[in-house]
Amino acid sequence: MKSTAIDQLSKHVPELNSSSGRVKITAYALLLLALVTAYFIVTDHIPTWSIDSEIIIAALGFLVMGLFFSRKQAYQEKYKELAYRKAFAHYAMPAHALILGAIAHAGYMNGPVIPTGWWTVVFFILGWFMSCIGALLWIRSAFDCGAENLAFLHVYHPEKEKVAKSGIYGILRHPIYAGMLMISTGLASLNGNGNSLVFIIFIPLGFISWIRLVEEKELIERLGKSYLEYRQNTPAFWPKLQDTGKFFVFLFTGR
Image (cartoon, rainbow, N blue to C red):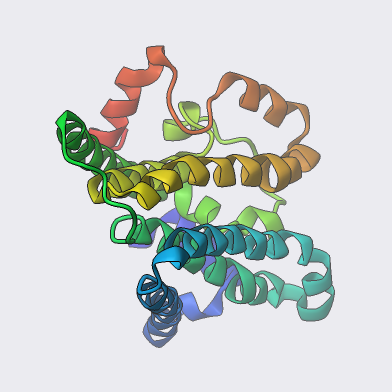
């Protein structure tokens, strides 16, 4: 049985209603991710390009995602009921590929070797812990009504939107982004070279800038005081100390 989120997406993306359509969407997503990965593999052979490419591709991902928001009116006027489907294919999917490709690249990018020491063990433990927690959080959040949020359906179809405060969204405002940040931190720590560790500093700045300047700005315009109160009371990426227990219960049980 389809989840409620997939049902909602299917109403606006006709391809999701057929097996061939779902195959085409999957193939398109994998092709985009493969192209980004191929770019990284090629540029990693140029030592001075590795961290530059990482930052440029991640930043480009956020910029392209911004077009999904800023081009909304133009797409609605041009494509009518297919506006969301067109904008997601043209902007959101390429942006996701760029950002996810950059996150994955943190685990294999080249860079200055850091001498081994006691910190090597710390990087190893932190890397596996953050990678596993992040992956679990991402998966759980996507199934906890996160598919619609990940697909930004509310941007083009806000008519039934309200502030989500149940489940993981009562603990974190952006659990899917939090999972991605944890995964990137984990992969970069396991890689353990100078460039990957620099990326750990950069990528949170990218997500913070994105949610403050684009995503939450748009949410505040639509939801007003209710979202401002939610933002004030609910952290974006890491739970409050008193909610840590609930956070790990959600990770392991999905509730």
